[in-house]
Length: 266
Image (cartoon, rainbow, N blue to C red; front, side):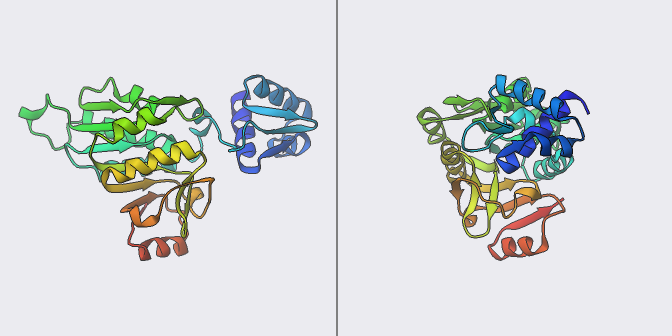
């Protein structure tokens, strides 16, 4: 196992448990305790975690991983989800994307579809095939070089963990636009409380994306289903479609369908 793989695994364990013990982590990763100690020391130097006697705790109360370390988790599921979502987006739609690894994959799938020309007439090939409104810096960076997509960035204050822009400047831009579809990544979907995320400032922006959209599509791998997070985005009554992977429990699928949500498990 490479250092990068160890670091990613350690951060995943930390996100799940909130703390790490050296001996337990060494057993889980099948490496020596000395290796784990060195890894934790180096991660602490990068402010990815806080070292404690015998282990480490998460840096901050949300136990949130920086986006680049989340990217490899459930990667194939997220790519399938993204491809399915791209099929739900109409030609010329104005699409809102919040930040996250799954919405980043959706952006890539939309870019590939736009590059292929889709169902467009030859006379219309010079016009953008989509307009994407996003508060995610990484998504904006990937789509800015795509001439087939008009990219609108909200502005705001950047959060380094997720590359999302938040705050009054973000709200000001979103209040001035109208979306055909909002595609929302989330950290949890609770049958009673609805959509949730770790940070309250990100939750308020995602809520505004939903309010400005005619349709709301939630994208998440099945590991988030039934999970709660700190901040509520909105209730399930605001969701039109949920796209997830085929590991979605049948009981959860039934409860979502009862709430009037069209479920795509791919």
